[in-house]
Length: 335
Image (cartoon, rainbow, N blue to C red; front, side, top):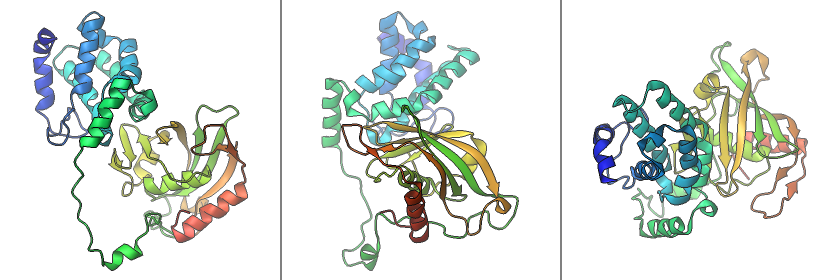
């Protein structure tokens, strides 16, 4: 292993020379992310054990490591989970820049990282998938973690009484594109819950200008769920969620909805409910009613009930779904 690391010293040095979170080689300080390189060292160790560094070019070998062995064996702070993927992307980028890989080989591996990203994040977050050794290490990591510093409001501050965690500001009649007729005013999307036969899906029309947090809550209503678990959105190379990726409260959907044909949404990292969101239509102001509001125009299949071991289903009633969507739109409150 020591000889192998010496051979790859320039690659590791190149990774450590850059401080750019999501563009090209990336690194964060040791204080912020102690185990940044652990997935890379595990990759190298497995390649050497399996026959040499040439294994790093084998697409099947990389896929198994990325989707099975690393999630099963490598402890990693859930708070910094996107960096685990970034570390491996950076490693392969630097292998290419140091001429250990051809451009086509690098692009093939980069495609695997992008295509299998939802599986990687879901399994890295799922204790049921971890080995006993990783479970023990993760428990020690959680137990030993220092709480983050926060600016706290005084106990008697009136904003505390006025605030509600279930209230998310929601545009009622205005969107960021109201001023011109040729800009998007709404989107028609189809959301498929993957892995179920017969299929379970919803077709919605949603206003432009909303945040990913608001989109998350619209999906929760459409599938009659309770907003009681973590979630992640993946749009191309970007990810949005709560706590372990880019903030979903401020990021709006519009740029991604106009650049991507589909997105991935994962809800409940334990159940691993993965959804494909297909952007079917981009609607202008003339094509939608005013004021704009979210509506479910078609729904197929009863959704599974949260936190149930048996396959219990919630009976589908589209009229009730639209009443709840309208209520959320009018009040901004998720019940």
